[in-house]
Length: 204
Image 1 (tube, rainbow, N blue to C red):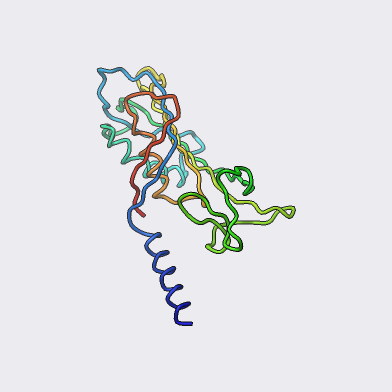
Image 2: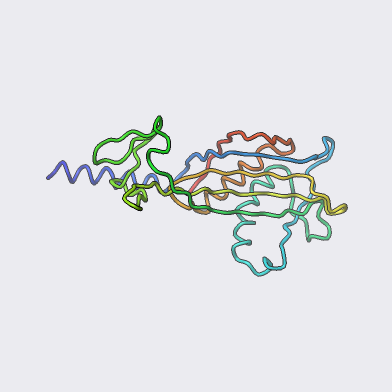
């Protein structure tokens, strides 16, 4: 009984550590555009569609992206009429369910403890969202993606675009969105259309 108490104490402590502090986020990044080599980052302002004018969600996205944009060298403009570039933001989360045997070289059955995947244990015993559908056990995953589009205010031409995405067993939180924007802007001012991995540090 004492060993069981110790085990639960260790698990509880590990859960608390996992829920706070710095952690690494790895994302697939693509970037596009024709940013002039001799052009400084300049000033920026966020641009919203009419349907986004009163959107708290859009406000939250802007706050999540602000640090990444300013780290790239941009400064906030007094208003959109004086900004050098206008920035549009987007984000989405898409559920994706996978059967454990979709990739037989990756997954391995480990009795009643779930499935073993390189880097950790995934399964019902540790609260990862498995569910049974048509007598088949599926791993519920979520694909998370953010996008940044910059337009030259004077010409109205799009001059830089970046996307960052990853997946996981949850929809993620604000710190993950912030990290994805940081990954998306990591190439600026270069354009790298081919998908490549970028790792950034996030803090819950």
